[in-house]
Image (cartoon, rainbow, N blue to C red; front, side, top):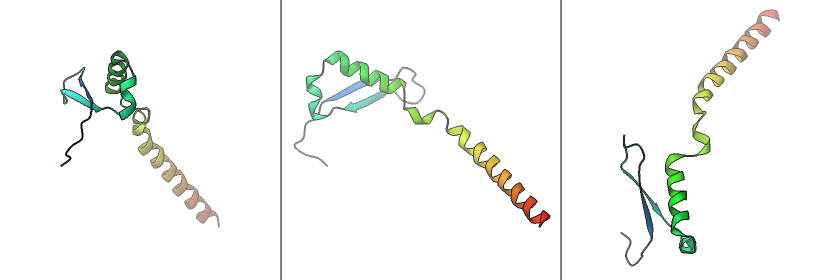
Length: 82
């Protein structure tokens, strides 16, 4: 439990209410110098865009499977020729 600390928060309603109703962002100490419109714009952008690294994760499984199959074939070929 934290006592004696007050933080500013921004609450943004989710655009698609499938799983989440709201996103709550806790502001850093220096965020009070930024306008309210800028805070809301950045919070809404963070809700819509989860991050750059989450889009192409489905490619890793097939890529590693193909690499493993290729290496297995190469090893089999080398052992059968020698």
